[in-house]
Image 1 (cartoon, each protein chain N blue to C red):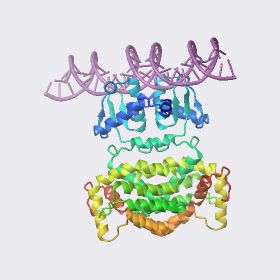
Image 2: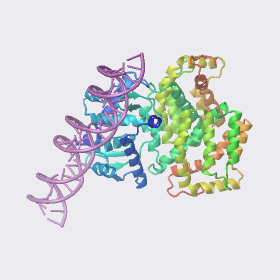
Image 3: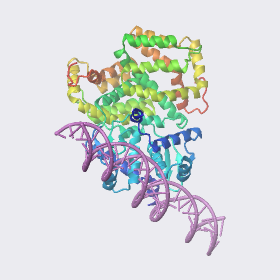
Image 4: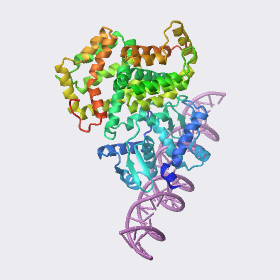
Length: 247
Length: 247
DNA sequence: TTTGTTATATTTGTCAGACAAATCATACAC
DNA sequence: GTGTATGATTTGTCTGACAAATATAACAAA
């Protein structure tokens, strides 16, 4: 009996009400714009106090699932899928492994959009990228200023024309910066090493592949561009607490 | 003045308190495991009623940012990044365009993990995939049963060793099924057309490329595997309300 | 009849206080 | 020193209340 008690996590009334509300939306086939019964009715229907119901509603409101205007009632909304991610993606709270997973996620996604990019690429895109590359400032160790680095990659995401992907890029961006900065001592030597071997890939190189419509070349160049991160991931996953510059 | 009033969206006290709490965590450099002041203290410190504070806390609790056990107080937690996405990803509520964007996201990511897959691939993985392919049932039009389709792709994600990516796959899965089912009348003819042209790529084909360690072959095969979806996306983005089987 | 104004009613947002259940801490008995 | 009982504290829940905003109805005027 006691073991059971320990294993059961506290499921509060609010949690149950939240779930019941989600079920309610689904079972009644509600669509964005449809209105929702008022608080008192819901509270009575669910057999809970208004305060409990309001806590559950507050959660859904934060997710963007419902919107309420005083006196006019509540309506169901189409939420921003990634909106709630913004709140939890706080690099200072997330652990090292999670941060690396997120960055790995981003690298994988950016490799994956290569196809989409070539599918949608227009001359206008090339001109905009050209402008970004021209204005960009690059240091000797192939590090870009945060702004030009962001602009270039953001434009790549934009070319996909997929809003979810673009939203993701926006959310992920601060994590990238944080990780880059946190593991600066690991990444910079790798870049220097690559530079000595002449294996550096600049934004300009990437743009050239795009201009030539060279898909495979572009893909390989992107892979090279991400080498420092991949090295970092394997380093951290291998569990070496102290990260060595050379794996 | 009135225009201002119209443009300002309702920002409730709860919204402000939620933000202040997030700021509080950040400014005080709190890490997972650190404890948080009790409700009364926070309410007094923020100058709001306990009910308002509790609504804000309830939101953060849902996100997995904090955990509270009665009497023992609240502690900061490392949230599951994608946990909150689960709640809003309800295919019945999301619009057509969003659903397609999500599926496009998934396709891009799956193309992107090709590199990671080959990087981590072991004989054990190949054996497990072999088992899945052998047990899998495939219909004449290259449609797999939902279970074998899921198992195969889930295993691919698993090979990446990136938990965030795996979590994403799990969340996205119902959306994939929903979209596949919703646009069945578009996808099935495409598959038949591809079959007639002998351009079908089966799970077994993909596995063979993995066995041969043929990265480019695998990638191209994956691209072919996703042709029906890409056709679907362009169809929908082009705005033709009535989706034609042949673009 | 139509239109503009006012008053009422309703609904959400916020507050205050209360109690039960759980559990930590202390005091006490052995 | 150890086990037990009592009290205190904290969260979860309930109830009731009020202010602000606004939809609705009633009413007046053209």
